[in-house]
Image (cartoon, rainbow, N blue to C red; front, side):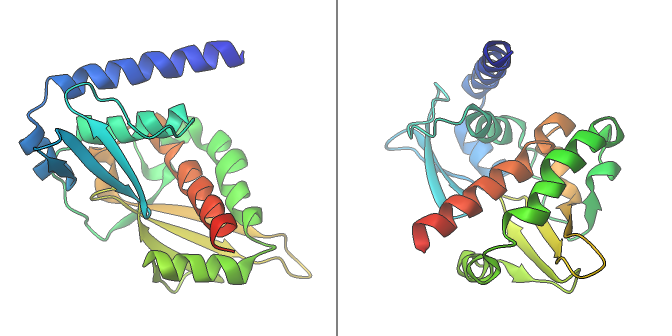
Length: 205
C-alpha cells in the first residue's frame, strides 16, 4: 500500500513538473506572488517562514524535504497560479467543490489532529504563531489567520478541552484558494501547515 501511495505521489509530482516546463516564469511569478530569480533561474518560495527553491524549467525542489506531498503542493501552486488575490472571505472544507466527498477523512485526519496537536504546548504555539506574523482572530478559544504560500491564507481555530467537552477545531480557507489548489490538494495543505508549525516549535524551543 505504501509503495502504491508513493508511486502515485511520484506520478503526480512528475505531471506537475511537466506543467512547470511549459510556463513563462515571469508571468508565473506575477500570478503566484512568488519571486523568480532570473540570474539563477529559480523560484524562491516562502511557506510559513520556510524557504524553498525550485529550479526552472525542471521544477525540481532543491531542498531535500523528504516530503513528496510538500513537493507536490509547491509545484501545484506554481503551475495552477491564476493571480487570484485574497478575498478575506473564508470558507470551510465542505464549501469547497467536492469537499463533501473527502470531508469525513478530512475531519478525522486533519481537524481532529489540529484539536489535539498543540494542547500540551499552547504557550509555545501562541509564541510561534506570533513570530510567524499570524493575525489573532476572534473565533473559538484561540484562532490565527496566517499566510500559507503566496496569495493563500488559512485560519486555524481551536476550542480547548474542558469538563464537558473534548478539544475541537476547525480550518477555514480564503475563498481564493480554489484558484490554486484542487480539493484533493486542500485535504493535504493544512496537514503540511501543522507539520511545519510542529517542526518550528521543536526547533525554537
